[in-house]
Image: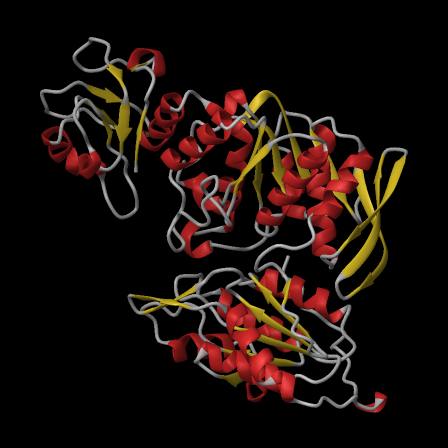
Length: 512
């Protein structure tokens, strides 16, 4: 992706005062790109290195298309000015944000990272700011461009140019605040370079994406990169109950507000009451306590609320307004989204696609379900293969019935993925495999009885399935609704005798 400035040019000497182009003279640019195919007359080409490609190999193509200068990590034998920098990924982000007039300097900007809960926390922060009368833009997994749902295709990572452009649009639209969800890959690949934050929120840090990061320490290091984006007067909000978060906090020289339910923290919560579709907890900050009632339930949602509340309080919003903002967000697409067509059992579609997220979601359902929990799940062919048996172990222990099906098998064998999941079962005979995802969902719904809960996990609001190289239209919610309306409405459900009600296993695997 490329970025073009529409108002004025930017001086390379001002952007990189410690580096000078090889030909000595200053250059003023109005656009830049890391894609040689997108170069236009007068553009700055940044030779970015990735795991799959080296932008230095395409410098000649960029110059033929009109690039007037190159940013590189080594000197190049070309007739155009070359600016040599230690990391072209950092340089590209820095240039993109300057071409966009450094929008995060004009906004109160909050960055959210963590293994689980990033999207929910981002939208809870937006809701709190809205309750306080602030106009806010959110860039998250549900929308990476203001007013456009999922502009980034598939599971692609939003680029530095897209981030800068989107923040610029938020600023130009008259908003005062922006919330940015930042994944570990965005941070590791420096797509956040140039982003400047007033606040950083760390939800939790669990085992995830090790297939991409290579090790737990690399994953933690990527998460900690968010702290480097804090402005001099910025602050961090972090989870005191999460051991990895406590460890990462030590790297921060900025003020830190902690939240938790078990360990000592500045911001705490105490559960009062919970049922399917509603929970009440007490939110305490110092000597102030308010009651919060949310339609989203589970301990994980209380933690999400605590993280968002911490950001709101540190932004100067009073506790009562924070509580109103938390209560105002009543549902999220594909995040424990209830599908209700009059059936006498619960049906929930959730984004949970890692062992930890599955364990958290199943525990939340177990606590509010009188009958059985039935789980439809699979594993993405592009995700960490080491997670597959862990997912099987979680579902075997935390659900009464697990149906293994396709997620996005991509170019991998669906049956091999299923067998990898079954490797985590202590009793493989208890597993059920239905590769066709629509068939698996319908079978699970047909198995459900009054008082049960069906969890359809892995896709959330994603409306596609990738099989081989094909991207097929598919929405878990549509499949569930169609069956409930066409078939489920005609079934007469019996109320089971108390003696036949199955209880959940007492033990849920710990994955921290």
